[in-house]
Image (cartoon, rainbow, N blue to C red):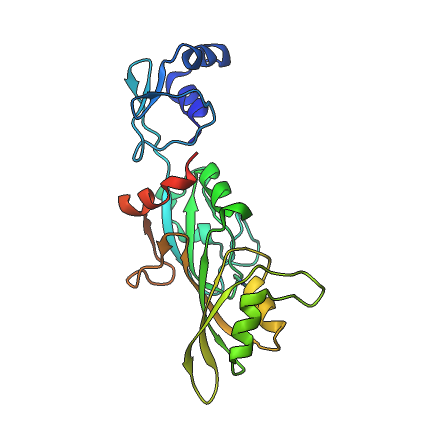
Length: 238
Ligand code: URA
């Protein structure tokens, strides 16, 4: 949560009083005077003290296993949304999904009301790795692996950054692959394969940055991030 918003909410200060707290060095994070008013803090990660009082943030961070058929929108008149999967007691104001998965894609989503954290995780210069596993219809060759490594160009001319394609399982029918990308273009994985004449039959996100989809988290289920998962996101708080 933004430090200035936290102070406003917890101490009911007006803008002027808040500025004064910063100017007079009465705002401390982890024991050090903090001057950056919009710094993103969380009391599970940071010790926040303002005019000698300890403040708690109370934001929410959920790891959710999105099933097929559910959309990543706040509201949808036709389909169930990811937020519909969150129990009413946990459905806090401002909760949203960090990045989107297509309706027919399954897998890991971070759902939070910490907007600044989500913004940082999606910044292209942060190069947050997204790992997908997929079954694709056609055989995948070492030429495909090299093409992904060099940067796929979509039909229409948009070029992607280099991506790591691994072949996991070859069958007489579909092929299982793992793909690691650092971007989040619309329908990116499907369009990358399409550019190689390959159709994605099934797609699942298994990791985003340091967060990994746990084996025991079934589709439709969600849970709070553990403290160590939240700590692994520390670099994205600023
Ligand atoms: N790429 C896609 O094509 N779809 C998704 O849902 C995510 C990445």
